[in-house]
Length: 224
Ligand SMILES: [Zn+2]
Image (cartoon, rainbow, N blue to C red; front, side):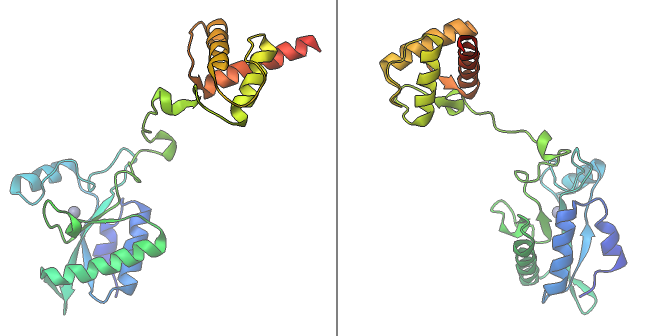
């Protein structure tokens, strides 16, 4: 089926990944549709909420900080006429979901929402498309100190062995490097962290491991 010029115009300002999905869905759908809305102003969204046509001001239709809309609404067409028959929207959604899978674009359909059925509505997920300027700017969940810790008492393996070796070279005796973060290694880590960072700890974060490694490398260079 063909999208009308009016439909294509309504895709302006919509995230290109969603536009890609819309165009592919139009190619493969058994149920013709057109686009009724893409990017929406905040004042229009307020009006829709007032009228009860939308439930939220936090809509994906409204331009995100990257300037793009992340939602579109469709309308089912039967013989050139608009239809609001629910089964038609399921058919359109089937085409959208297939298109999204083909394109590798995550997609949410308002018809799948438990809160209320919004059959005409498709959007890119907030989680994968936060709408910020770039992926780099996206808010990342902050790891806890424990998650950041590469090595803690009880850790085992080659990274512990390297740590023990570095501690020994610095003069903080961790015993024979056996790859086992036991009490002796723990005491050495506490002494080393206090000396190198001014803050005693037994949690060896990536940063602390690096500090210890660099200090050990320096110490070795002096000896050589
Ligand atoms: Zn919508």
